[in-house]
Figure 1 (cartoon, rainbow, N blue to C red):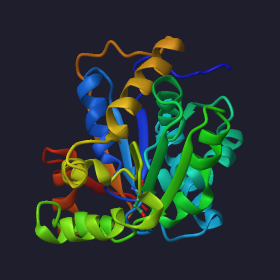
Figure 2: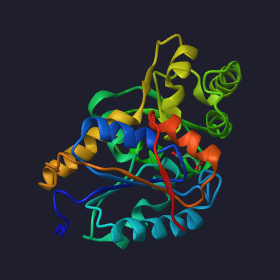
Figure 3: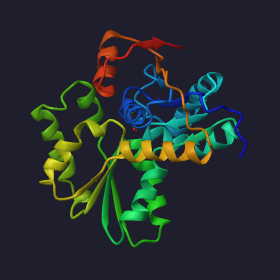
Figure 4: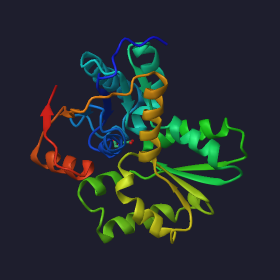
Length: 269
Ligand code: DGL
């Protein structure tokens, strides 16, 4: 595939809102010379409750914006959009940029590390009902039993800053005690919000099962893709820009919490 972007072109990352900032942060730590343009579609969140058609429509508009910013690589940092829109966006973008989703690196990780296991997946209604993870894991032919559960209350609870409150433990316990997730050896956190509560989820299992957290795995996959395409930046003055499609004070505050550092959001619609 031919790419016309240069090594110092930015990486584009998008999500429905703040969740993808957990991944943007991991990428900026691993690849400090890369400039990031982040887009959070806050006017249209949550994606997790929307139809695939609507998510594809919103995602195409964001991709247009990121391509216009000359991004060399675009990462769909949202499981809901990765499961609904990745195939369409692949043909839409063609060779204009490298396109990555947050699902395939996890499937690759499972392929390399897990076999004959019982794996649970938690995520939004869209991610779970699309069966994107379930089908890709089945295609590995590794005798893995996989079961998904939509856990829609987690995202608003995390966004409302309850991630260290006993309310989150009650929600975790309610969901993870359900029949679908019994006797699992590993749990995939298939929502970019969930790394924030990884430790609470792990504690629910007395730290005895493998919690598959995508942030580091995806950051390494971005690095690998850039290296394979000879597009790793050597820029010592990398700069990040953060855009949202709707801007409020509380959203600005949330963004800092998810990125782990205060950031300046710009409105773009
Ligand atoms: N961060 C999104 C994901 O990974 C979930 C949030 C939403 O529903 O918009 O699926």
